[in-house]
Length: 409
Ligand SMILES: [Zn+2]
Image (cartoon, rainbow, N blue to C red; front, side):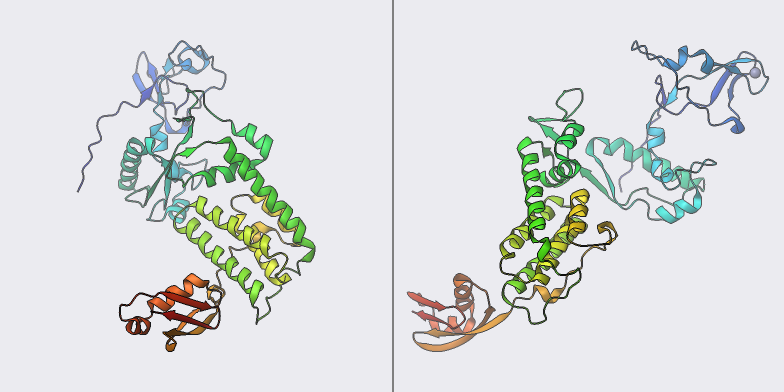
């Protein structure tokens, strides 16, 4: 067991931004808490920021000068505000009922959204992890003990994302090496900017900013745009089934389509590895480009639709435009995530006889489209073949695709 000791914590700050400390000072009564009926104390929105330190609230007379809630005499309002950790320690509960004006959070809504499990996946930077998580756990346990939250722990799992690195240093305003997303979005669009960020690195790693990388993503989306425009007129209506006895290019494209669904689903849902998911869709697009001349309409339709469905979370604007262009009348974002058909993944198998020194000694089963080295490896791996080779070196081999394998020892 690991015990943490939360030390005494001075929560007052001489800052404007922060929750006001609801206390007034009266000459007669001393320190008086603001009664519940008068809460919340609202910050003025017309403060003057001097830039010379100290809280701008302290010089705001209309905020400072108030009446004592106890005796009605003249009183002075507390001008320190609370450390922002005071709010960030329980904001996840507030997010469950952000419009509730009566209370910090609605017990029914928090029960629905957080249950007794809490937040499933907490995503944040490592630099916030230690203190923030410690405070959030402390607040959760206090709120639990007071009967406000049905939780023992606020977060199930922590995922710490990497930082954005530019010219070897973490991007930050104080270093002045920040790339403004607005400029990128104005030049390339939000889809390209988002795709680049997701493709450049897995989220737990630092991301090296590269202008060439952004350009590469833009080219990829242009290729996709041209491909779908080029093939759209040849596509049969959405949902057209593939011919049952499909073979050759249709079968290959169908298999690639479903292998991609499996890879992207695993990468996105199981591992949050968006970069390899995007790389898989790029491969599907490459296969689709090669198949355009040979494959039938239904296989092309399936590949085009799947490409757009798999890309939709990353590039929603481009994907929905192309979805409509491809003849769909229902919106792409209403579409369920594609499901893998395991039968599509099976490669058709053929049986080949294997000769050793001119005599058939074994039969091996290999995928119909296996290449020479795959067939040879399968033959050499067969136990009966190994028995007849009896440790001798294979000096010559002949592979006749679809027919036979001949080994000379
Ligand atoms: Zn008083």
